[in-house]
Amino acid sequence: MNAVITGGTKGIGRAIADKLATEGYNLVLCSRSEADLAATKQALLTLNPSISVATAPVDMSQKAEVLTFGDFCLSAYDRIDVLINNAGTFIPGELCAEADGALESMIETNLYSAYHLTRKLVPNMVAHQSGYIINMASIASFMAYPNGGSYSISKFALRGFSKVLRAELMDKGIKVTTVMPGATWSHSWAGMKDQLPESRLMQATDIADTIWSVLNLSASAVMEEVVLRPQLGDL
Ligand SMILES: NC(=O)c1ccc[n+]([C@@H]2O[C@H](COP(=O)([O-])OP(=O)(O)OC[C@H]3O[C@@H](n4cnc5c(N)ncnc54)[C@H](OP(=O)(O)O)[C@@H]3O)[C@@H](O)[C@H]2O)c1
Image (cartoon, rainbow, N blue to C red; front, side, top):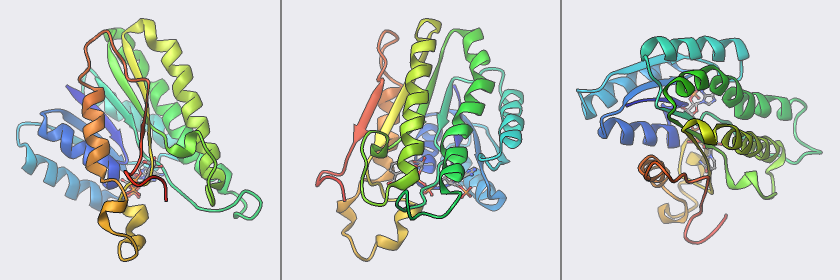
């Protein structure tokens, strides 16, 4: 099985890469840092020397780079079984106070990235009449919260994209899942480590284990939407 994970070097994406590598998936990963990609590839091949890992430095906010990355994925493997649209960015703020350009920046990184890469890879899945597309949305995809600002708009939009895709692909053998995590320890939360107990947030491995469940339902079932929260609720 072959999986593409955007933003596979840190946080949730990296935990998914670790899980799929352990389970024997060949991978294609991207992020903006070549050094992180090289280190991640090395670590994944140490976890499981029998898989192959292809990496490409890509800024997923840039349409031209996303399209080139799509070609790279298709040249790496004849068949793409799993696409995980995970790369995303969170710039906190309020709509009327956030910096000019915050909406555009997060729409480009959190929505257009998934839209353009999915359109590039779906024909390959349709040809095989199978595949999984997993979109990493957020609890910000269905609720407003303090300082969610344009991040929330971008994640509502990503959920909308995911719902439309689900409807369009259900008769083509392709499963589409929207994953909506609450607060999860990752690079973005690093500054809070000394203020909150480890147990207050979810672990990235919780999301990765959920993805594994999504990939292991019977052929006749799809997990359309998944909401995950810390046991003690939102922060
Ligand atoms: N952590 C949470 O609490 C939480 C909750 C709900 C949803 N999410 C969503 O889960 C996803 C992963 O979040 P995370 O917390 O794991 O983030 P993270 O630790 O900051 O990791 C983000 C990953 O995406 C890559 N990335 C970011 N911007 C990119 C770009 N423009 N082009 C290519 N790669 C890019 C990063 O690598 P580079 O920086 O090197 O490019 C990194 O590999 C995001 O979509 C986020 O919105 C997170």
